[in-house]
Image (tube, rainbow, N blue to C red; front, top):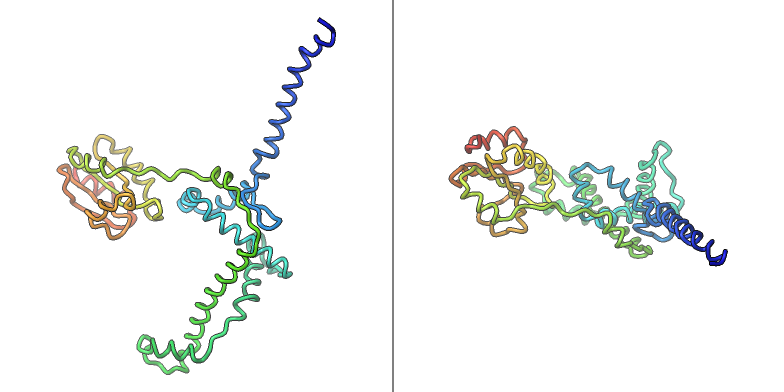
Length: 297
């Protein structure tokens, strides 16, 4: 074997390791680095995966969890904010000197909307008089000149809101926005699993008390009560059944139990008979107390 061949025997494996290490380093620094991964590009500026994570982390946990399940909705809000900031910058809008950080950004956006939309809202005397005629009785039949300023402000706010939405939509349409669907998918989390109607029906025949939460994943009070129900389910294993049912998946069940407001907590005794129901969120002590009344030892 020649000297060159012998050298190649150990040079090639070393070279492969060096190349692999370089590729891995590149992936860590660039391709896999959340600070460099672009989840959205708005005109010439980007929102990174890391930025998205920091923004969503500022939101209280129950809302945060829901937004992570549908991250595109939250991302769209960040995109609109960036579009407004870019437009404010283009028009030379200045920050409120007293504002810092996010407050400074908000002040610039407010200045933009005030200049471009709110200062241009007009309310005619005819509009004021029309509202007065329609709601004179609700206004205590007070004379027009007394309530006109209030009516004008109400009309101005309503018009302002509508025109702001139109203005923001127009800016969004003109902007060049690119969304990286792969990164959106990567930051999303699965929707929480809920129980089935069949499991619930079987439990009613089990000879144990049953508590069912008829709610939905998209309902904030429902999500706030879930950790409590999870704790109770663990604490009462073998003593009672605790279920979480999504009424949008099982509409027939919601109709059968006449659910009018979610969450609705329904308690059943050992015979499977409904003995109590509570609409809306509830504290753990009250839920446990009622569950004990149904026979859960």
